Length: 338
Image (cartoon, rainbow, N blue to C red; front, side, top):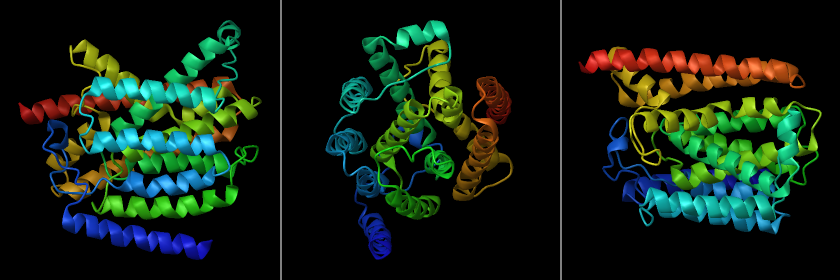
């Protein structure tokens, strides 16, 4: 298996170089939200290379494989501009995620709030709530995939914590493939940091859904662990999405339309204009700074994952830090522009 993994890694590198030289599956379309960071032709093929490893991890579940491929195709159509309308894309997301929740038996077991748990015991409500959580995660993950390595580093950290504390041991997935998955995604992160490839919507969709799938399954089968620990693991992409929706509604901007006012983008613009002139370096450092902060939050949360009060304090702290940084960076950038 090690030989196959190494062969596949070499295949990824060579094919990525080929795609980049031939400008196949290029990322740059001239959309306004791309202008803040990257104007080069970089292949959106990360999702293509992630598809097989993710399927192999849970290869015994054929329904999972079919649904992952379906999610990938939705993202691929978005990347290739076959599906331009954000409303239609979101509608397809809703339909696919609902199917995933139903056919994969995904369920939020408990919130440790008696009144809300009464609602969760209702099958229909649970389907809607679980689907809502997955949609928040998927779209939030797509939002933070604006800097090199940011999404992959965040999601990899989450999978690593689940693997380290043996929380996925009760799942019917191939644990050996998890180790090979880490190697493959490390290769993709390196290629991404050097601007040789990007995940694209296809990659962001399947990676975030896969992590969401693991989280929900681990939560359901480890109810002795606080559900807020699992929320803490995913607080950043989820809060990014919710915060963006509120921010856009406040400014009468469509929540489904991309913009340049996410925290990672503001940090990038600030570093590029004040400290680092090189775009790629500013991009990577911005990504690494946020990833280090998130990894720190995840590590602290794992110290006591049984206590809900402890986890809620960490979530509140993370949100406060995010909000303060957002306000400060937004003000500084306005001064730069003014």
